[in-house]
Length: 314
Ligand code: CP
Image (tube, rainbow, N blue to C red; front, side, top):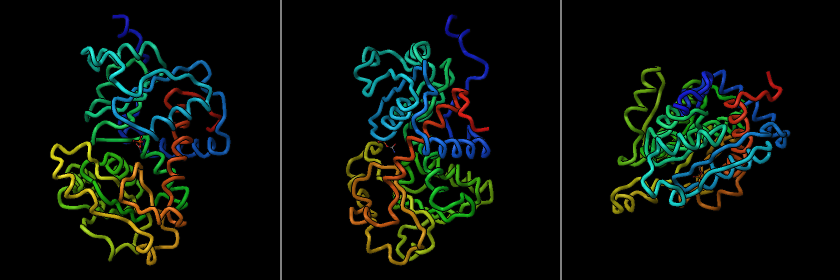
């Protein structure tokens, strides 16, 4: 009873990238630009943010924590659910109820698709989906959009190549949904076993958008504005033999970049395994480490937006 009465009417979560309108996305990117110029601002003084990571993470957790620290907020949470009462059999429902009463906002990564939506319905505070299984990773998408706009000068009419594990890669699912708003053309490059799921292709078809599927991209690489490489998601395979068959299917090398557009950029949500050779790292077309840095500014903007904090931008 106590918990139910605490939920404010205006509590808003970020579970799917479709939770934000195009105008709201642009506003967040503009706010992130401000944070890039001035990242240390005490806007979260007195706020407590819970970071609940039921799955491993380097970039998402640490960039959120860096963002919170630079804004003067405090962090509670866990990086490994084995140190929480989940090991005693506590349900996600009860965990979220409790953490809601200890914090002003919850950032959660969980292996089960739909867990973030469930948490947002249970919580009395905003919930940010930091990745739910193979489903969505909307804060990664916002930093990807920030990186694309920053490098291309626009989000409109771009040719986006998505390469690798399009079946289990939640980052490509969220990014595809977002970029569909700005009339992107999509080239999906994957082995048969890891094709973009039908539900996401239907999402594009319903909007009359073009997409093309390939198993190789060496002949068409010159058309790309963005090449979005992805790791084959080993942890989502139930059969290790199936993973072994596809794990090294695409390796981007510097020698492949000669015939690419001058302003083409290579993105990757990271971590990488073998899919981008280290000889690409020194190419001016490699942008994945800057992309990861952009995660701090973008997450500062997302936190302030969901907490209703005025950053000074109209
Ligand atoms: N991009 C991303 O989600 O990285 P982590 O798994 O390290 O958080």
